[in-house]
Length: 428
Ligand code: GDP
Ligand code: IMO
Ligand code: MG
Image (cartoon, rainbow, N blue to C red):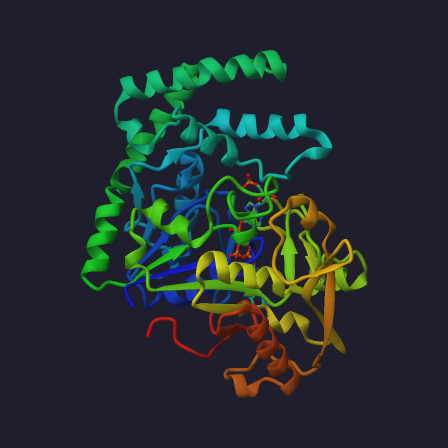
């Protein structure tokens, strides 16, 4: 089983960090292929809790080589501070590899991200303010700065000047902000260059060779399917492709090399930031999910919007990612409800709709059609096998599996590494 993709099946925060970490001990490489430090992946190892933003969750597994692929956007200051934070806690980070083709987030990208959001007012996306969108925009506009540019001062200076020529006009004339000095940016970036140099590598070559040698490579998505710039709830999305195809472009590995695609699926739904969310709850059930599930953002500290499980979204994730398996997380959070509503379809302008509508206005009008499933009250956090779960929890899992279109191969019953029920091995 040489190459697997592990990605979010909903709007992010499904528990990807925990799932990646769980497999980390058995895989040779864990690769981030898109996004940047907008991600917040929590990993709990014993009594230690780690919040990773940019680094792949595999960094916590000693045998594993963590890789930041070409599709990732890298804030060099964040990279270095995350590395030193882990070093201080005794984590060896020396194996990290960073693609020379990955684009850099600079201070002007974070500035543009924040002023753009302010300018949008009530139409804002609710971004993480980490400069993600503006950095990807520069990449597509061919005025981005790449990791490899740190090692050619003349090219770096030319590129920063070119990018700022245009941006300073916008900042000064449109947003009434002070222009940014190109030399200051160049000096700051050069200040990071030597510390990052030991990690820079031709990661596509390394990864393709590894797969050819039968090594196990895990591609770890940030964000989630519904935040994908092509397949998500545009424009309320991030600026990259968290969906499975993103692993190919964002790591330079062909689709023929990928054997398995695992969707991480929360047993209910959450979303951070603006945008449509059909099963969102505004009542005490929503508050209960938020409190019991600890649904507060790891990156921005914002409360997550909470709602019931949405099978239409899960089916859509199966379709656009070609999912082979689901990892169902946070089942334990649902303990204590007498009945649990599950959204099986939408009603849009009086019509029943089974598939995610492609039209944005239809999706904004979608009302959930719920089916009630019986709940359970027993503590399930110690369950080790499917048979250990109360009958109604088993029924809930089986019902979700039937509606979602791919087998549920693991179930999370708590945040810890060992609080997992493994049904089918991901690595066989
Ligand atoms: P990610 O962004 O997909 O990695 O997810 P986050 O780390 O942002 O949010 C998931 C949260 O749920 C974290 O606090 C995890 O520690 C926690 N978590 C993951 N799996 C489970 C589970 O099965 N049960 C419970 N109770 N918590 C979990
Ligand atoms: P992980 O990897 C949840 C959301 C933001 C905003 C939108 C665009 O922890 O699941 P951006 O800063 O990316 O331009 O913001 O995307 N968002 C996330 N929501 N989990 C994440 O990452 C997210 N990363 C971005 O809240 O709505
Ligand atoms: Mg998160």
